[in-house]
Length: 65
Image (cartoon, rainbow, N blue to C red; front, side):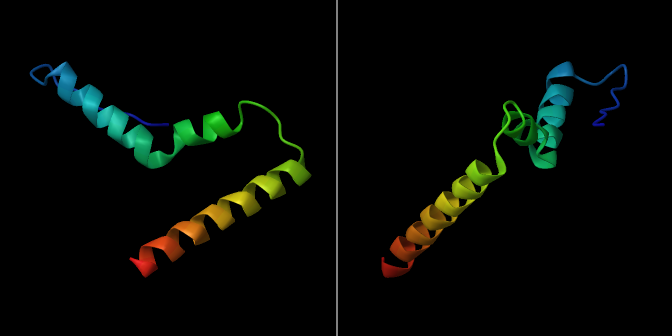
C-alpha cells in the first residue's frame, strides 16, 4: 500500500504529486490495466511475443541511426 504522510503545514498539491509519482513507480496502475480483463495464456503469450518484436524493431532502428 502506498502512503504519503502530510503535515499540517504541507501543501496538498505537493503531496498529491508525490502520491502520483509513487503510484507510477510502483507499477500499480499498469497492473490494474493488465488485470482489467482475463487473457487466455495463449493470447498472453502472443501479446508478449508481439511486444518483443516491436522492441527489437525499435532497437534495430535506433542502432542504424
